[in-house]
Image (cartoon, rainbow, N blue to C red; front, side, top):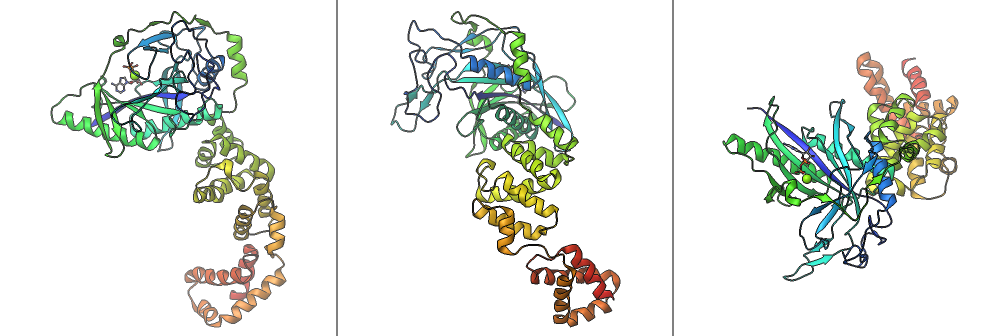
Amino acid sequence: MQWEAVIGLEIHTQLATKTKIFSGSSTTFGAEPNSQASIIDLAMPGTLPVLNKQALEMAIQFGLAVHSEIPAITTFDRKNYFYPDLPKGYQTTQMDAPIVGRGYLDIALENGGTKRIAIHHAHLEEDAGKSLHEDFQGMTGVDLNRAGTPLIEIVTEPEMSSAKEAVAFLKSIHSIITYLGISDGNMAEGSMRCDANVSVRPKGQEKLGNRCEIKNVNSFRFVEKAINYEIQRQIEILEDGGRIAQQTRLYDPDLDETRAMRSKEDANDYRYFPCPDLLPIAVDPAYVQQLKDALPELPEQKRQRFTEQLGLSDYDAGVLSSSRPLADYFDKVAELSGDAKLAANWVSGELSAQLNRDAIEIDQAAITPEQLAGLLQRVKDDTVSSGAAKQVFAALWAKEGQTADEVIEAKGLKQVTDTGAIEAIIDEILAKNTAQVEQYRAAEPDKRGKMVGFFVGQIMKASKGTANPKAVNELLAKKLNG
Ligand code: ADP
Ligand code: MG
């Protein structure tokens, strides 16, 4: 039997507001426990929430970026449950009229195509506090700093059919929220967490299978592994004639497996009802339009501009548009150097390799777009060979504040195009290697190509990489053959 996996995601993203969604407490990460919890976050009787306008605005920006409808009226609801880190006894969230309606996102597939994934809706809600188990022997601590932090929860339709697609979707969301600047997207700090709903069904069957929900997975890699594990687990149960119990499960990265947490609750277990403390919000279409007009260029549009206007390959455009700082850096180098393709090669090649080696991000790069563009201009006008350009790059990286021209001058890396000087080097190398020259002349023409490489290598080495390769090849061929 052939099985097909079905995946729907619920993604919680922490919004980068200064203060909480219903109170004036700070949202800064890492503060002393319970130092950022006000009487509202602590649910003192008689306190009333006031919606943070910035949170609403960020949610609308997100909605616009994923082609969603923004409703004219949005409302808040209470989701009731008991947990020590939820002092109110309910979470203020949105159920009936969420701020972000139906939308979609196109994800890139491995075969080069794209797939449209529908977004069911996204809603605003408050985060809960955190239970701390590690520092307390036989007890649990509760830190309410996170209580009331604004989140958007993004809910997709069950339309992804592999772990890879789910990760591609998640990465797209990550790139959109960081482009918009509405979240830092830091998964390690919990600013973006994902619940993966997974089911399987016989290939070709319309009806969805029973699903399990894997809670709070907090890295792209773990999402992929958790989903793959879960798909396999479900297939094995079904092939043994069993059935899948609807469950909430946990992913354990150490054992690389998912484990049952509890049987899945239904919406009506939560006794949702409209929050009487928060009035419905009328969303002015003119205000939404204003936000729409002010949206930055988003990854999708950037990718398109990179291929259509700058002539980059789909692959380069995809890599360079994946993060906004990287795209901004590339854009600057392309503009200043006047050669987008060369800029793309260097940013996704030499520069990215160096960032990887140093394990740093583009905003910590030791070479500015101006410096790199300066170097690329010298590559373009043949002042330096591409080999020498790599040496210049390394020197610029190692010591701040120099220009490419200064390094080229100081290190004597100017490319020699003067044919007299190149000829002198060639003569010297041929004179030193008379045996190889004879071998070359005696060889069949189809064997000669490889032997030319030997001479070129020697000549480039003797010139410290400064000889113009084109001139070397031409002059060498003349001397060897003539
Ligand atoms: P709940 O409110 O119980 O979490 P929803 O109907 O809101 O359930 O769905 C939550 C998520 O689960 C959505 O992302 C949806 O796409 C996904 N989902 C629903 N049914 C399935 C299924 N059979 N297989 C995989 N994912 C599913
Ligand atoms: Mg759910």
